Image 1 (cartoon, rainbow, N blue to C red):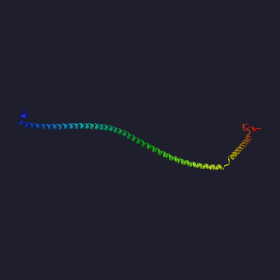
Image 2: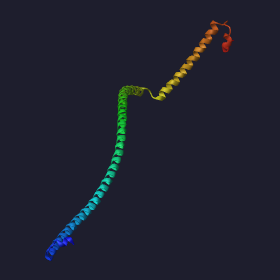
Image 3: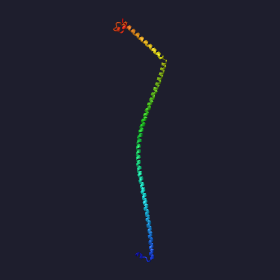
Image 4: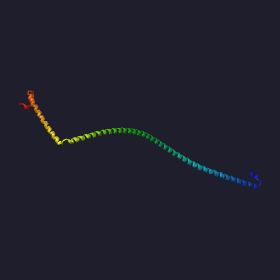
Length: 194
C-alpha cells in the first residue's frame, strides 16, 4: 500500500505496473530459458551418461575379450614352447641317428668293398677252377670209354688174383723145402704134406 502511494497518479501506477509486468514476463521468459537449458543439459547429461555407460560396457567387454585373447595367446605360447622343446630334442635325436646311420653306412660300405674284393678273388679262383675243369674235361674226352676202362679193370683184377695165387704157391713150396723142420710149417700148408 505504501508502495502504491508513492505514485502521484493512476497513469504512473499503470506505467509502473506495465513495467513490472514486462520485467516479470522477461524474468519468466529468462527463467523458462534457464529451465529449458537445464532440462536440455540434463537430457544431454543423461544421454552422455548413457553413452558413457555404453562405452564403459564396451570397454569392459573389450577388456574381457583382450584378457581371454591374452590367456589364449599365453596358452598357445606355452604350447609353442613345448613344441619347440620337442623339436630341439627331435633335432638332437635326428642328428644322433644321422651320425649313427652315417657311421653304419660307412662300415657297411667298407664291408661291401671288402666283400667285393673277396668276390673278385673268388671269381678269379672260380675262373681258374673253371679253366682247370675244362682241361680235365678235355683230358677226359681223350680217355677210353667207360666200358673199356671197366674191362681193363677186370683184366687187371684177374691178373692180380693170378699173381697172388702164384706168389702164395711159390712161398708155400719154398717154405716146405727150405724150412721143413720149422714148427707148424706142415699145419700151415697141409696140402703140401706127404
